[in-house]
Length: 422
Image (cartoon, rainbow, N blue to C red; front, top):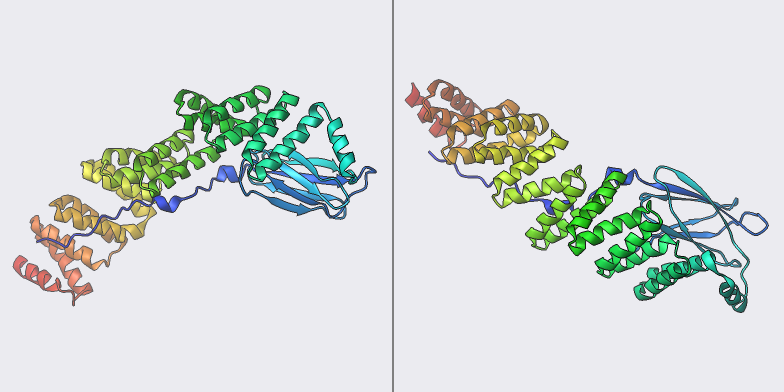
């Protein structure tokens, strides 16, 4: 007797993981508490404060100073550099770089100068030298990058670095522009220059790693990755690479997706989503040993992860690893009882149809532990036990099936089997 086969319950759902929310990244924010005054030390109300980041297109925070000239900016990611613009009619617009610190509130003060004529402003600009001149030119680069003119931005950043060789931010921004343009060798070189000046520049460390990675320099990429791990700042980069994998998978490039997911998992060993995505892909492709290995890696991090338990169970079962399958089944019954009543029953049908009767019996018994009144599970278990000569237990399940589903077409079969057993 053969039961109608059901399709396998595992489907690759990588596309549902289009983005990753990192708790670690979300907790790595910082705040800037600012105060804006005039030359006499009086607070300036109504200054429009706009924060942007050269590293993230479209990022913008806007605030307005209160009657005390104060404002607060909250950044969810303290690992990046930001630029604030302070603007009010009657005053010179001020651009300044800010570097929030994770878990802290940094206090900063700004002085706005009265607006002057264009000629006077040009004369003041020409009179600037050294670090002041470098910062002004750097800010012009920020403005150019915000406007989308990467060529002009790179020139300004380069000029700023020439004026002040100790301005690490200029090299970091050059690395960012080169990265956006796909010139990964230049991006890595500029990031290295920034880090030679300021070894704590997190953004430069991130750019260095990603540039080496995308340039195919695996040795340098691993060295840069280790530096990020030691700093404890890998979540953001790992999430970025993971999402590149999702994009590759959704476009049909499975091999690239596998490579990206593995890179993300190697960079951040705690990124469960990357290992789970690998397990799902390998399972869908029939690489059961690989699927099982990746699923078990997930379970080492999250022992009750339902998706990983399902893949572990089904992969181990098909590989003939009964012990591993049984442990996964125990975990599933506890963590996802709904699956035991639905998905596990479907697997039991498939096992029965593949003449794996003992495995089917084990699965059906677990289904009935979770849902004692599962009529079809009683029927299939009764049939399976009957076929193995266990007529007593088989009769109990067949009778229960008839009680639960007297109008089911298979009730006639159940009655015939009961009659034969008597």
